[in-house]
Amino acid sequence: MSKLRRFYLNHLKRKMFNKIIMLYSTVMIVLFATAAILVYQYQTQRMIREQTDANLKTAHVLSIYLSRQYDSVQNVIQQIYGDATLSDELMYFLNHKYESYLGYRLNLFSRTGEQSLRSFNALLKAYLEQEPGAESVSIHSYPRNFYMYISRENQQLNGEFGSRSTWEEWFTHRRLHTWDTMLHAEQFSSPGKEKSQLYSYSRELQDPWTLEKVGMLNVEFDTKQITSWLQSRAPVINGRVLVLTSQGTVIYDSEDTYFGQTYPYRSELENTGDWVELDELSKVNVLNIGNAGLSVVGIVSKSSIQQNIESLRNGLIVVTIVFITASFAITSTIIRKFSKKIQRIIRSMNRIGEGDLSTRIQMPGEDELQQISQRFNDMGDRLEQYIDKMYTSEIKQKNAELVALQSQINPHFLYNTLESIRMKAHYMGAKDVGQMIYSLSVLFKNMVKKSTIITIEEEIDMCANYLDLFRIRYEGRLEVKIEVDPSIAGFSIIKLLVQPIVENYIVHGFRSLEFDNIIKVRAYRSDDRVHITVSDNGSGIRPEKLAEIRQTLARTQPPPDKDHSSIGLMNVHERIVMNYGESYGLTVNSTEGEGTEVQLEIPMIRKGE
Image (cartoon, rainbow, N blue to C red; front, side, top):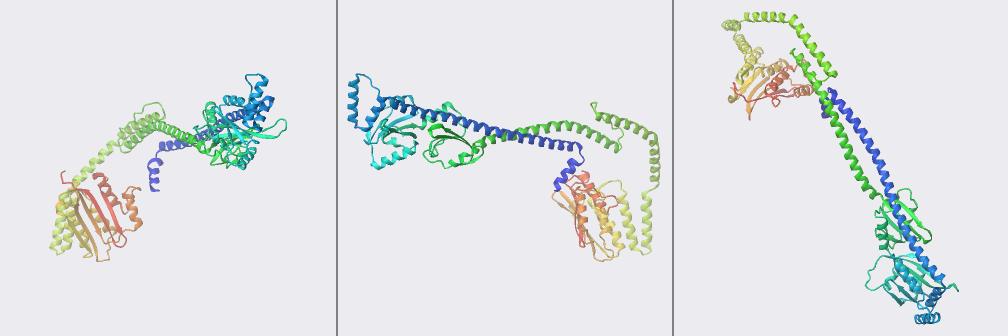
């Protein structure tokens, strides 16, 4: 909190332009941030809508493909039932042995005399050639318990493997599931051919005359053809695409996760308008394929959308920061230009306040600040003329009178007079009085010296003479201990740095009714610094008062007025800082009722350096 307060005091409270920059920056940050949030929300909705529409387009393309597959199978069946020759041939094939079927074909050929007779297997092969998605066609005979497998490469006639009950179970399942992924074709596919993910469509075959169910037609399709179709018609596939049967079995999954399984989130697909909880939150599009009994499901997950949204968000953050920084930089540059003009006016006013009446402001431009500068220069001219006329002669006269008065005071006269008084007191037997006069004479002699730089030894001697006056006055109630390292006695020090601290103890810490008052003055060296410590066992300083003194020494609060009890300590500290730098100064430690210790720290400088 103190750091924040110091920042406010140093950079905002008394600096109008900094306040303007802070206010402007706050407004810009709020505006840019609000605009970025609005753009982010709009773009997020747009991305969701675009990806959902793209996924719906993919699902629509796939529904067209599946609908065409279904229609082509139905067309083949209609051709068989629409042609009596084909339907009779197929029924004979399903109800007789294959050898009898071949004989039937030969008799038909000889009876008609045609070289080329239409047959159902030729029709099916033509279908396979025209339909790239179809992998194979198989025709199963109920009465004869065999099937014919037809592919683009070959044609096989096989007896059905396994028990009769197994085949009956399979036929029953296919009557209920016209679309499925049961790979029954693995038993009769071409040798060496790579197994693929296949889905199939089954249709029972009936005798057109008796309506008896005599077999089943099974057409198998390769899911790779769906993928190829989508890549050619919808190269950008957003999200996931599934194809479900009416029972919920997945016959195609663009991510190959649920193929051949019952889709576990089938009931949730009805909520196509909102976010739906599937494997994760997703948007869903569902298209039903007419009479085929299939559904195409398009799924766009929130995580896939989130990836694009994150890049958008990062881009908006970068752009917003750039705009805010650029706005702040431009504004700061312009305002700093005016701030420098104001600072120039303030510095000139301070120089006028310090007495430099020749100060003038050179301000370019024709704005209000230039007008203020011009008025300031005019005021300086008039003030300088007025002072020259009214006060210059009077000041000169006062200075002359002061010099004359000072010249009448001969310091040697005072020294000689004090010495005569001391000798008289000594002659009369008042040795204590003589000693006090001697100490006062030496103290006065040192204080009126013109030099402000003396040795440490001389400064300590002045303190000793000052303390002798009070030691004699209080007749044994004050004990003085002085220790000076001989190696630093000749180093220089500013005059009257230690004496005010000793005087501060006499005025505020000395207990005149007690007989155990002790004051210690110690001067020693530490590395390249001189330490002078003044410690006592006096009244001490109250904690709140001590905190106030320390804050003033640290310059965290204004200095006290001239009548303040600690003004001497502040004066000593300021003189040390002004002459030796911020790294030197005065520190105070005290305990109320136990005493006080004041330590001065100055550099080691030999006299004359």
